[in-house]
Length: 228
Image 1 (spheres, rainbow, N blue to C red):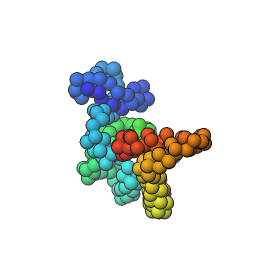
Image 2 (cartoon, rainbow, N blue to C red):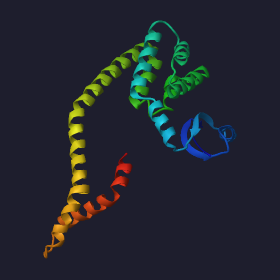
Image 3 (cartoon, helix red, strand yellow):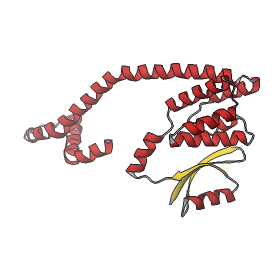
Image 4 (cartoon, rainbow, N blue to C red):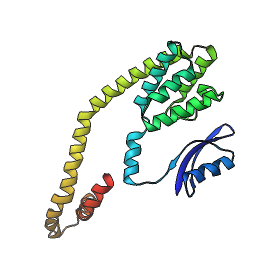
């Protein structure tokens, strides 16, 4: 079986795929190579696993809510580890729960929060990490996270408005593509017999259109499947 893992060695994060009989064997092999395993999962590509991973992934909204909750608890007087412990017990989303567990474990082991967040560049951008690092250095991590959460909430609202604004043009574009596909696949082939009776040299653009139409008429189920 193939397993995709993320691990730390000499302060560097690496993400690769290895072959192993089981997940336990994969972890044991990585530990023998002096790698600290952050996450490991089967890299199987079945439709059900892809569907599950899509809806279980850590989203931007998860990061916004996580930052806001952490900022509120720190400003209420809780320590960083206490706050992460509470979040770990509250969060039920598996992917986000794994992130919280790893962050809590490494901070408990003595690492700084900014150092741990660098292991998740897909969730925490450089600006986010830089602000956390400045908060740690100045002793005002709670205030920094509060300001950061406010900015992230505003960004989330902006993204929401942008998505709403793009719905109408997106529907129009999809409808136009659908009409073009129907015309090329089902209408134009019925007109090809007319061109066959013409004893003239057709333009290159017309020949290309005929070739595309002929291909679509034969392989349209595969085209729809590929797009899906």
